[in-house]
Length: 260
Image (tube, rainbow, N blue to C red):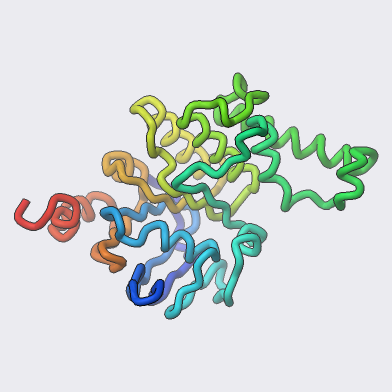
């Protein structure tokens, strides 16, 4: 992949995270450069999702620090991270199952709505004009993700692969600087993975987004990513461009076992 700059958007320095006596992350450092697709991979239990939860403020590490857009962050909650341009999808789809595709994607615009609840409830005057503009943005995202045919369908009635696409749409609706994707292709067939890969690349190239993703399909990771961070038991064991990482003996051992 190309298009990444040398500017560091997010810098993780010596982060450690524990739950009771269990270490989820131990002294991990890495950075994410503006405009790149940054993969985080590793075997089950490696600490990948915990690391995304640290980045978007859901977990607070006991050690280390995070610098985002040049400012070292204090303790931050997920909604504060969202206001600063960090959007997130989840390993298990987190959508409003009784709402339509369009309405789910509209929820991603909530932080950008300036009118108060009173005006939104009236749906009149400035509030109506604002809602029309936000719906226009969401309709454009629906076109981008090629899901026009399900725009009025309750997402609970959709197959899993399409639900993952709707969740991506909701994250895109936030217009984030940093897009965090936790296993965006889990449960998908080959064609669905190809579509999702294309959308992720186009989000980077056409929409200027920086992407950090967790993904178990190593072929997809190596094709999509500019750089790959590998975790094992909460520790960093490799961090480099895809061709170097996939040839690293420590990475091979982590996935195939010592003595493979």
